[in-house]
Structures are given as C-alpha cells and as structure tokens.
Amino acid sequence: MAGLNERVARAPKAGTHGLIGKYVSLVDAYLSVVEALNQLPSTRGLSRYRLDSGRRCGGLLGENRLRDLDGIVIPGGFGERGVEGKFAAAGLLGRTSAVPWPLSRVQCMTIEFARNVLGLERAHSSEFDPSSPHPLIDLMESQRDVSDKGGTMRLGAYVAQFSRGHGI
Image 1 (spheres, rainbow, N blue to C red):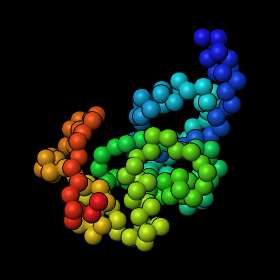
Image 2 (image 1 turned 120 degrees about the vertical axis):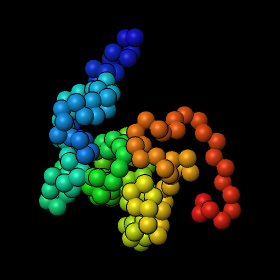
Image 3 (image 1 turned 180 degrees about the horizontal axis):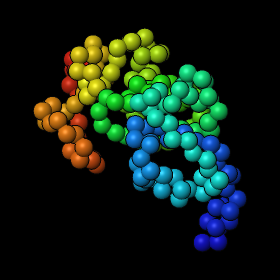
C-alpha cells in the first residue's frame, strides 16, 4: 500500500480539461464521469470547463480556445442534439493535436476521421442521420423501432458475425 500512496503523492497535477456534452449546464450531469476522474491520481489540481456541445462548445471552437486545454472528455449520450460539437472537438483536439481524450465516443472519432481525412463529407451514424450516404455506425435491427434508446443498449460481450458485402 505504501508504494501506491507514494505514486499518488508524486502524480503530476492535471491541468485543464474540457467536459464536452449537451447537458453541461446541469450540475449533476455526467456526475459519474466527473467522480471517476476525481479518483485518478493524475487529476489532482484538475480544472474543468464544461463545454456545451449543442452550442459548438460555447463558441470556444470558433475562437480556437479549445487548444488551450490539456485534455477533453466526451461522455456518451443519445440523440443528435450536440453531436456536431462533439465531432468538431474530437477533430480539433483529439486527432490533430496531442491532447488526450479519455472516455470519448468511438462514434465521434470514427465519423470525424471519415469526414475530414477520408473526405466523406456526409459520413454519419444512422442514429443521427438515417439518410447518410455513408452510415459508418448503424443501429441493430432490434433497435430500429425503439424511440427511447436510453437503457436499451447491449452491454458486455456480444458475438458479431461479419459477412461479405456489408461494408466491413
């Protein structure tokens, strides 16, 4: 135990992180994410900005001020509101700089990369844009008619069968 305590005491202070989501104005939104981060030794002294992805991170994207952050956290969520701000932050910080971004949605990374590196301008998830010519992430057949997706996710191990002609 002494070794762990010493490592925690020597851990560097964390700097400034941006929590990017659509409910950041609510005090208890993303509380589990914030509390999990608070348990990490590397978050001692961490300053956090809550950035509203629905407002393109409160104008910080346009002002190039996100580059002042030492890291970003993009919690998961459902629905299309705020997702474009998450994509923009993922591209500006997550891919084009050395800023770490734990807990980020694979959707954000995948879609932003397809749009800005592969040139697939309308790449999207079928959850957000069912008419996308490049649906990179698709709903499971059993979820297509579910209107309230929260609490219906498949969690844990899942056997996926890939077959020819399905874009994989």
